[in-house]
Image (cartoon, rainbow, N blue to C red; front, side):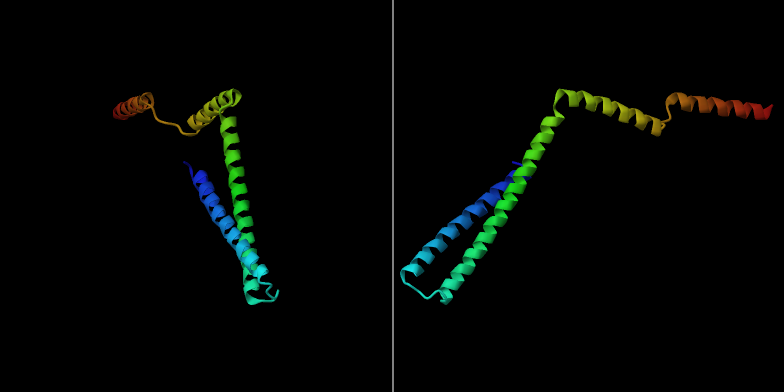
Length: 130
């Protein structure tokens, strides 16, 4: 399970809790309506505030879920694009070009180059004595 899936599961569980809380608030509101309480009653105002907070939380969670699902779909599309046959061959060509550029940039001394340097030093040494 990757990080996005873990986040999705956590947000889904949180959304489930918020919907349960919403149902409880609805039940409390029904009880208050049955008692014919004044609309400006403190309990009713508290429940209205809880409804608004719950609604805002649910909207926030749904937005996060939507964003994570879009990111997951984008990752899936990128994976599919990566493994298309034409992209595999293009990737191979681009990798070869990058390797050639890297070889041109970084000159690595080879055994032949070292051997030639040693011979030149020996020649220079003998030429100085003569």
